[in-house]
Length: 118
Image (cartoon, rainbow, N blue to C red; front, top):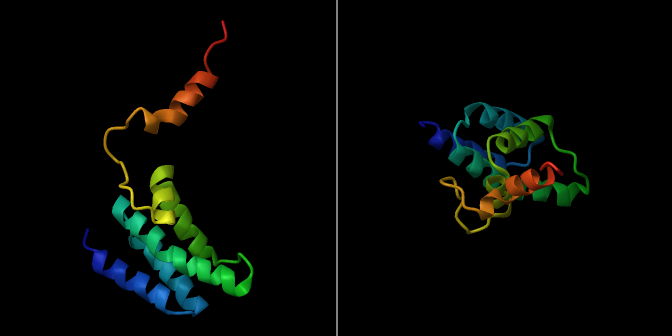
């Protein structure tokens, strides 16, 4: 999409400022312009350091509503493994193609637990 440059600038602005009002505005704008999986992954991995900084400095976990909405939007548009990988900056590639038997572990467990007893 054509928003990559804007997304990168907003992420940089978010990470380079300490102003809460700017953080709210940037989170709100990012929530409106990110549309694909790669952009969601980029936002998650790029904004986590600022989240850690806010938590360490204030000893509270009090984030702006816009930031929560942005994280929630990203979480809704990614699979759990994708979100986890982006959040923890793991270097292993994110699998988005054909699932392997291991990636279907939770589905198989659910089927096993809900199988007929008789």
